[in-house]
Image 1: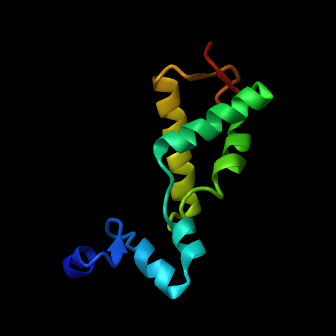
Image 2 (image 1 turned 60 degrees about the horizontal axis):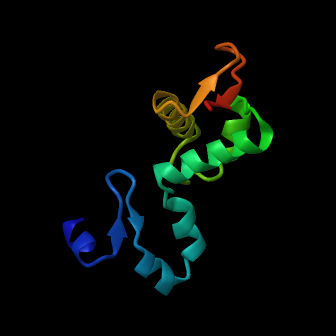
Image 3 (image 1 turned 45 degrees about the vertical axis):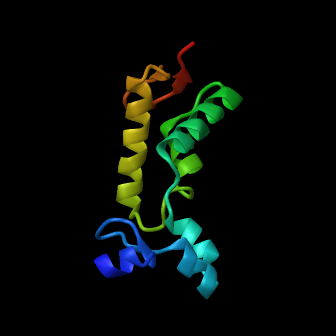
Length: 112
């Protein structure tokens, strides 16, 4: 694994190892590489915030629909849900969003 990583053939951390961008380009797997490669945390934050700005509020179901297909294909559905939980929690802790609904029917809004 170390040799493959040094030669620039693979990326990621165990157990989520993927081929590198260089290998994807050579083998014609550009789309698969991009689906496997996760976006940055800030990009996920930006999508959530933009969604709330566009619509006033977003429910958890709305946020799931917004992000599920953008998260890496290497994640299981359970891992994707946990990742979204963490992103929402981080935005809340940063003072960017708050829940105006209940625990069972969340409505996330921006904090002005």
